[in-house]
Length: 260
Ligand code: SF4
Figure (tube, rainbow, N blue to C red):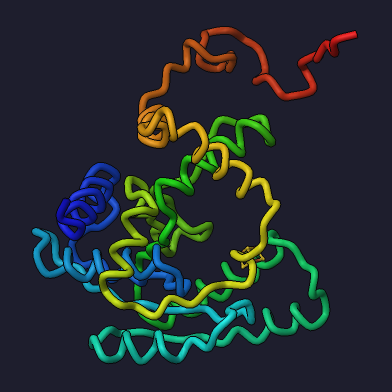
């Protein structure tokens, strides 16, 4: 398998299918320091050279005090490749870390979102690309169905709340086997985040579940991805799609009978 060809084909398919990038766009890649965003950045740089639409690419990293290693080797690697990269030390996130060291993901991502919009405004970009992979889409789909009572995952393309930025996730068809191998082949110094080392989370449980089922059914994630793009709402329980005048079902509507 030609890894680069496979990655570009899948990224190109996502960009085309969901009209993620348009002529004249300036795309800012959110570089988290991990293998996924490195693979995304490289894929977009390659596509910018050969795609029929004209667009430019830059990258940025938000430092929130969670990296386990200094970010400088990544910076050196990016600069040696002539990549337009901005490193942003987010002071409010560091204050949050001091004042509430055990804060959860909700607060952390709210701080990151604000910092992302601040940085990208200064970069003159109108599109922000995130490195969520096919694995993230599948996990999010299952997590929402199992724990929130909603059938949803992540938006492949959407607008920021104020309409200023188009937010895109061009790796939605790319699995982490591909990003890991591709980032490794580039020799990029990947920087782990302290949170990614934690175990015992729901995310980890879902990953383990996928890995165990895939021993016998290797196309599991492909099937889940296909299901997200092939809805049959008339075979679900949402009355809005059934021509019935009733409210959508919420979890409390169900009575669960426990075995005596
Ligand atoms: S996993 Fe860590 S870095 Fe990511 S949102 Fe949660 S607290 Fe923040």
